Image (cartoon, rainbow, N blue to C red; front, side):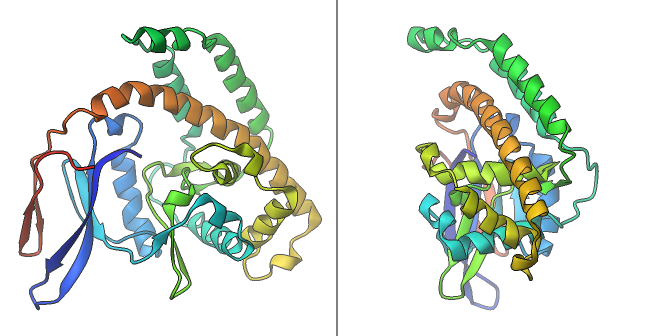
Length: 296
């Protein structure tokens, strides 16, 4: 997600104790690719289940959350066996959270919506326009339809999925050995295999080096701890093979999703890097913080 600012703010409570909170300010137009209403609804239930920062308040273009004292993971961390096992256990627990409302998977709705927008973009920049015109959108559409038909055959379980489980959305307090899954902007009911396959794609990091995609042995280690967190070595070979096929088929869908998302982002960035018209008053307890302008 792109935001105009993420701020750590220290405030004094009425009893004199000083606490830190996180203030998140959204950039303009981000609600086009992120359903803010869905995000805010989910945060309440995910927070109650122990995930992410506690939601303290919302305002027109952002939110206030508790501060998590932990470091953000880097892509290399995710393949470390002990951390990979913990991520798998936490994701298993995440997928058990019940979010009220429709349980209809949103993945293909989002992909087709992104496709419709991405296929009719206009670029004033000549070089961008030339590159854009090389994209064969009819072939892209056919690929989307083909992979949807293929994944439909899997009958993958529908869960409330994070949908963006990259290293930047995982934090670790090493003193307490506590892992946090954070940032639920893209969270929705979706397919289990998509959430896992997308996570595996993120082993490639921001450079998208897919030579770092986890090996079958690394994936099986993850699957064991995901399927049976308390008894990972009792997972059957049949169950391992089934979820391996599921995750690695939906991994292809992840590439389509983010490729279409990226095209839309090119246009959005033209707006996001303009000065942000933020001038909102944030009130936390008896402390007021005025944050005009765009901070990066």
